Length: 477
Ligand code: C2O
Ligand code: CU
Image (cartoon, rainbow, N blue to C red; front, side):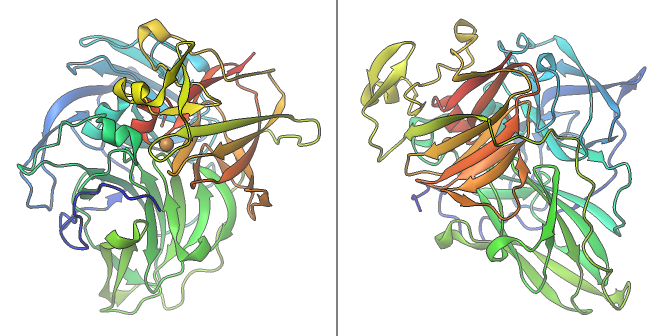
């Protein structure tokens, strides 16, 4: 596994001490005639439960993460984004299948929202599940500063659980003075594993222990909102069942090798049955970076039991209305990701010129897709030429090939796709996702129906890799 530059995390130090799990539903927001307002502004953010001083962050509606937005399947979201930041911004609705004009990608789907301006986002919510929203402009800086929030769409018939809890998993890179390090998009982060932080948070605060009662059933929604950190969570003494991935239902199953792996952008819904006994404590731990394993928090059993035996078998959620790709006759393409440190990439095309790697690095670029480095979101580069063009309604199988020494979670906008195979081995669950993590040298075959017209971003969700050129456009006409 590649070395990361997580700055000296230990099992204890990185934990900022105690915080509240987010129990749904969440706070009412400013409403005007059915339009919610989401105002982005700088704020002083206390990392609750930690010894750190408050940091200067950016948040929506005065909080980090932003308010949890909650809707019913089939409802319409109407929300005015107001920009009170010192920079342009937009909001992207990660994983939601929205019309192109609502996708929140500056210069590609809408003009940037300037400071003092606003933008009305309005669209239907066809799919139930766990989603999130975040800035899509200078996202390696703006998302790291706190511009993200969770969005939950309830099923028409939600499964019966005792509690519904969401954890936005994040990390922050704090300087020795306890302030947010301003090394956004540093050349080192761009060309290595991205900006890995040194302080972990859950819902914007230090992770707090979770009090449980024996026998209760919890729906735990996990969302990785970090720029670059990958989480791999284990639950000591418990056997959670995965019921949805990236918002979409999956056959309930135990997490492979006992770990719930979440790359930036990924979500996982778990059913967690509290099978411990009164007085017990069990760790929820992370060991993705093996030399930096740590306990995220403890599951703590109070004296009272809710029921003696856990509730019956796992709940299979009703599927979302996604078109099934027809593999026979699907159009097939390969996207090869290359670059980064220790790569065989010596040059790549930037703005139509073959540029040597050393010069790319000086321009803050390090990655290419099929030999092309994305120039980025700048106005002058409204459109990188599309990586591929698909006809509306066409089934498509893409082989995503990670030809680098680094991990990359590859995200496609506007669609969900089935993960059909990994390095030629069929996947057991053929899960729907919008962001698929590729290990070094791994290939993933993904299948989907190109049923949403427009120019859609496809990019690595390590936000520094996105900045560094690992981004492109899939056009559906
Ligand atoms: Cu969650 Cu293009 O991003
Ligand atoms: Cu990447």
